[in-house]
Image 1 (cartoon, rainbow, N blue to C red):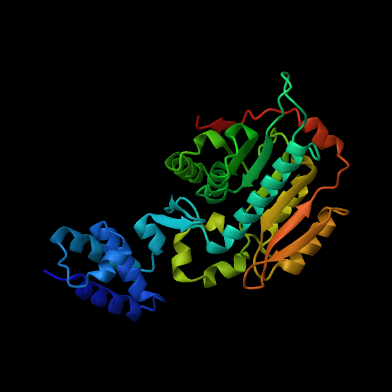
Image 2: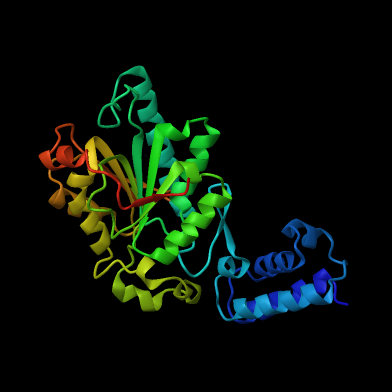
Length: 331
């Protein structure tokens, strides 16, 4: 019966041989998955024997990794912003850099809730008939696995924000991705804080939002063939941003006057080489709207922050009363 160390050494060698960047780490994670323990357990107990069933599962997983399949798909999960999300080929694997988008979203939502509590700002379209304030409406456009929306909802719950205070609408054009997002929402018990809509960007009849988050495709079509092999296992539609990588983002920019409330804010993740182009495109599509590009921890452009001026366009005011007929809740 092979020991954990023997299996890890053999698998690491095989993975190294095909150019996997983190062969030993991957081998440890896959063996931990096969045995059903934490990675630290297989590292700490190198002489422990591994049962036949676990070894077969492990060897099959290693073969998938040798074939360049992402380890997140093999394990069926990915850690993101402190939570574990189910992931599979239905949606893009959440990236660490997208955590910055969540952090900005949390800060913006909390700031607006604080201003509303002090009577210094408005985040909705007024009050309900009984005098209670309408919720702060937040959109996660192109939700995929639900990573951004669910991480935001979990963070708001941890900060004791009532579910009725913030309405988070997560959209995606892929019904398969939305199914995965719903599964993740249920797993993290935030179904009462999320609503889902299948739409190209946003439903036509959705009421405007105070905060809009989006991690849309931004890789130029011509670059897709040169992506690392594991990335090619992910849905092409979640990666392909058109000729210059900004086609989908550009379409969202054109929608912002109709989907953002006055003083609303849009936080859009962009590619590390798109800072100047994204700023120019925003200025062209939305003249007079304050916008800036925020860098990530590596100092690279990462998020376009776009604010709507206080003056409301007639189209947004008219659509504020539109319902969410295209939305479905998890209850």
